[in-house]
Length: 355
Length: 271
Ligand SMILES: Nc1ncnc2c1ncn2[C@@H]1O[C@H](COP(=O)(O)OP(=O)(O)OP(=O)(O)O)[C@@H](O)[C@H]1O
Ligand SMILES: [Mg+2]
Image 1 (cartoon, rainbow over the protein chains, first blue to last red):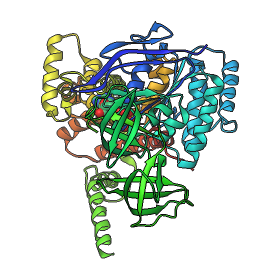
Image 2: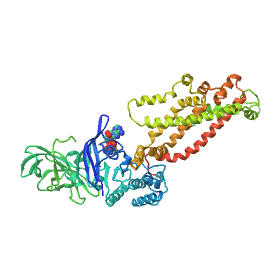
Image 3: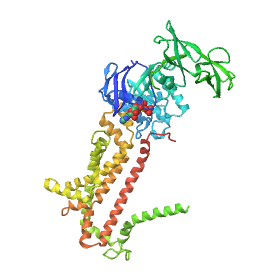
Image 4: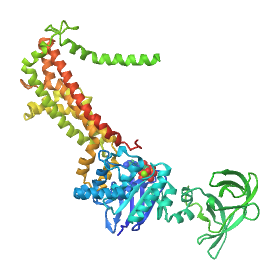
């Protein structure tokens, strides 16, 4: 039922700048894919290329095997929602939602009832005759979604649809959006620069930088085993530890960090190689005695749901740990030992990026 | 406090300075003297009733109106096209082309008039009403382009993109979305064009023929021949009233549009 989408070596530049650089991407039928990256990395450009508002300088875009690269946007049958909703200000809510059907020549009575059904699906039933300017941000967002869905699009393309909403409403809408997408089983591409949102909503995340996809994987993959320090730091706070490969045996690399050695499952390292390890603060375990990296607590910050313990290693470097609020107690100036359970940290080969 | 009062006083003086000539004309038009004096002597509406006897003025008014309506229509068509096609697309030489279309604003009107007269008389095909309408369009179109371009720059392109993604072919997007979004800009552009055409003397004078003369040109001719008489003041007074009435009508229409215009900007949370 659901549509798959393939991008083959798609590039698009603006003057000197290459906004989308030779992208290959396969989106599975029914998948919820997030395009995540910092401002200006080309997320919107990629979405506009898929929607057909822009044409690529090179490459092909295929929808269920059909080459749509040259197809104008009005023949693509894709649902689009923008950050500012882009509702038609001179049409009522019902007219907005019904527009796609009217254009397709659906008889008036049927169009109205289908538009009403789409509005009901997004939980907006009492605002039919209002104009967009009379609605709240959340309501406008729902209208935009209903308007895109009513034409039963092959794909749903969402460009930061929630970023104009305040935090609590945004979280509520995230859940609703996810449930709606699951219920309809529609292939969805969701642009965001909010890493938490991307991880929460999507089946897979494409982390972008400067027109390229740095890593594509499930939320767990990109979060737990980032391929480089850019992905590691973009997806939340992390500790980047410098180490050296001490020995490699049986697919296990023993890496020396500060004064301790830690095993990593790794294939392609040679002894003596400098590496970088990413360790999420929530995976750090602290102990007031024992083994691991020795150091001193330099500060303890209370955040309500957790503690941030700042830790200075004897061998140099300051790192942080997130601990449950009732753990410890930790005191500034106390000596501690830092470690992690195996598999909680991941190696990033050093020198493969400049972040 | 004093600074504010001074400031408001100053603004008031400027307004007075701008409107005084119009007030003088309005007031002087009721003078009992046949020549224009200020302050007026006595009070009479005779010169106004006199106008009706002067069929020339009525014919000229009708002609002016006809010219202004046609020139406005033509300028709006051209202006919308230029604003949408040239104003919105990037291509080499675009800004040069845009300056070319805007140039009649800064070129001396006299030069434009002489040039057009020469061109029309040599071509031989274009004369009478057509010549005047075309000539007026030359000077009205830039103003239409200016206002419509400003409106297109304000309008959110993603709204039109959405319409396209919903299946609307380009002409449908234009009809259903682009033009309604531009409506306030189109209306102000039309007002500009109409006023510029209706007020024009220079070009109308050059292109006038016996019995085919616009009202401002006729007034100018009469004043030049017989000096300022009170009939001219009365006609001018009526013109002022006509224009103000027209503006009020349009203002009411645009007032309604403001509601939509506010929504063209990325919509914020409304009450
Ligand atoms: N029409 C355009 N003309 C020129 N440059 C453009 C155009 N559209 C985008 N760009 C440039 O291309 C790059 C990528 O832009 P894009 O809008 O795709 O970024 P983004 O990832 O969506 O960023 P954001 O998170 O800020 O929305 C930016 O450097 C931007 O300035
Ligand atoms: Mg963007």
